[in-house]
Image 1 (tube, one colour):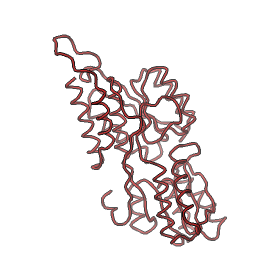
Image 2 (cartoon, helix red, strand yellow):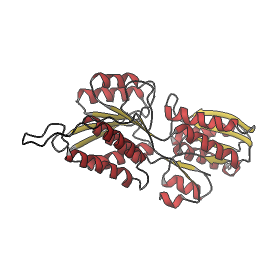
Image 3 (cartoon, one colour):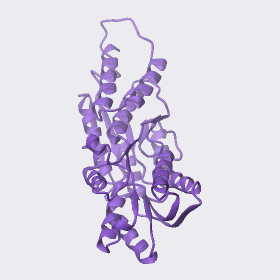
Image 4 (cartoon, one colour):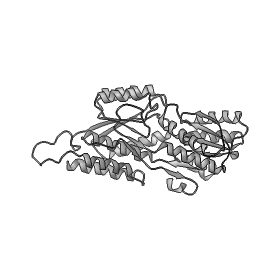
Length: 338
């Protein structure tokens, strides 16, 4: 038991070192674990049980939405760093060959079950479509966690991420305030049926309702993809001679939208707001191409999800939902994220 607790404590420390920020979700998980911990037994000379992390090797599988999405690749980096902390955890990071294919994700879950995974972690491409796969994992007795993106059914061990509705609401409010409450705006959505996109869009739309002078011209999906974001924005530019603001669900689509605007010399006409952080996005903020974005500490999300799975594999209970704080990023604090 002492070795197990030391192992779990190291994960709590990792959650902070990966991002240099919060360990809120880890602490929530740890608290749940302390409250539900199996009773300490008297020491004996008997061989260690298989549930002792110093003996058992755990095989976890992490299934992302897309192997071409920079945010997902960053989560994979975080997963590998977290697993490396504990020699007894092997983690296999995979994703569909076709980006955002829930059908392929279902096949990958089924294969993980066949291979005897100890736990499965997945960011669903479709929050409803993935439910049959989750139910198969449930039937096999394999804990399944959904870091970053919620599933709309099945018995999920835990979801860990930001409050996506609040993300959309705060970005939508920032856009409206930048336009002083008056203007024509467009919205670039993620993938239809994906909880991350749905909740952020709902937040944007509710924020727009607070500003009678804001007119939403159009809202179209671009599947979290830079090239599709560019195409959607090109269509907006052809259709609408006046656009004052662009809201987006993630920074990849925004970067594509900026390219489209610059190609026709209209980039200075509108305010762009978005979510997620990388160096390209930070450069765009410093250059004035993006007003504001949000950082969600994706490596902390996956580290905490792995931590939760390790707890579950050893008979502990964890909180069903764990929130990671979001930070807004503007010109004033881009240096913090470089």
